[in-house]
Length: 191
Image (cartoon, rainbow, N blue to C red; front, side):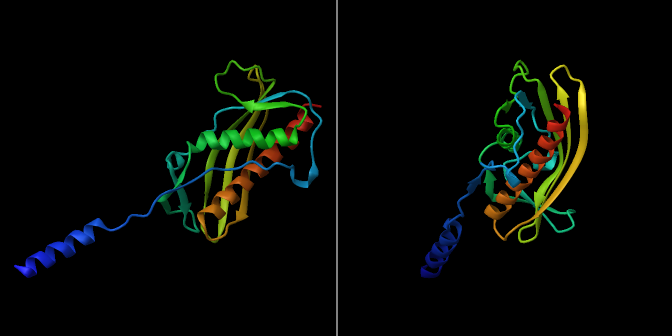
């Protein structure tokens, strides 16, 4: 009888265990423009909804193997909101840094009165811990009437440390690089 009680207690203890708690992350905007460049354009700029590939449409943070052919979805490292909304907000905040005299915001309803609109279709936004993070995106600048002013594709890579916080920081840097590229192009178009 003692054997069975001891076996039962061991099995119960094995099932109870402690589980790892999840950590939640967000991307951040950079408060100062890289290289000190700002543009004196005074206008209204709206960032439309960001389109992400299906593999990123989830709360788990995605990491990839070095050759980007295998993905892992972390159950314990998650976004604190929908990634497309976080990306959209941070891109708008980064653009506002480059255009301090302009009103830059997120297009939420389509009724906002923006002179210029930025649309981004992300094809890759992930990284490998301890290696690199990649942002590959097609982006469009257009007028509020829908006239296309520029269509381009940008690809950026940056080194990543060995933690998820390092990855999220690197991904924030990638969005800043995208915003700088868009700002440079818009500053030429809007002259």
